[in-house]
Image 1: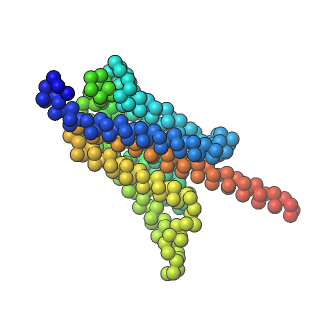
Image 2: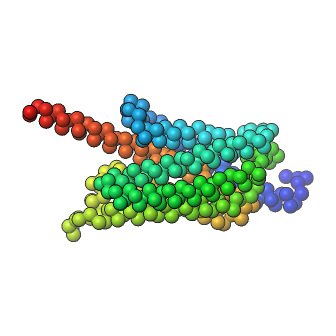
Length: 294
């Protein structure tokens, strides 16, 4: 890179790991997202498109297709394939994608609440505890996300010279708070999950995992979703803390985290919908049997 001033060259070297990390992790997330869509499309047709409209169906459609479309835009913005893109594109793209990302993460948290509520045999105190924690976490995340987007818009540009991607010059000071609130909420969910598992009566010769298996796929999908949420939120929290706003590390894992969480949440949604279908069939068969013996 001859002809580039040494201070600019050092700055580019500092930004390069984050720029390429974000680019490649976005591509990995894109592949995971759409490959899982292909794998579960048959279940989607059976459990979503052919079923009556309900809240789970609505959340699923917003989550799967909203995130899928947004991820296409993200991949384009960081791919390096575009040239001479105006800064206004990055500003608008950032605002829209940030809103979709926040909405999708709130949907995932709500779906985890539904899974937890079912696992706890629909106990009202569990639902109230989770909803209160969810409301607090959502308010904190929304407030800090809005403040961060305002900072983003004023510090976002398209790098036409070197990386050919949308770039953010500084880390918003409220960025850490978004991930901290998400981590705390997921700690609560994981705690309730393991309290539910360990509090069940069992004999000494029965292992804990045998009790957990009675919940079937719902437990494991809820656990997987909450664990993934916790680990990925914690990863983003750590990257936000170690990045002082000039390295670009705070955004590296966001696209991949978004895609991975969406995949696990969509599978959880399909499982919840499967439970509703099975309950409806059970009620139908019981009604038919009752009429036969009357």
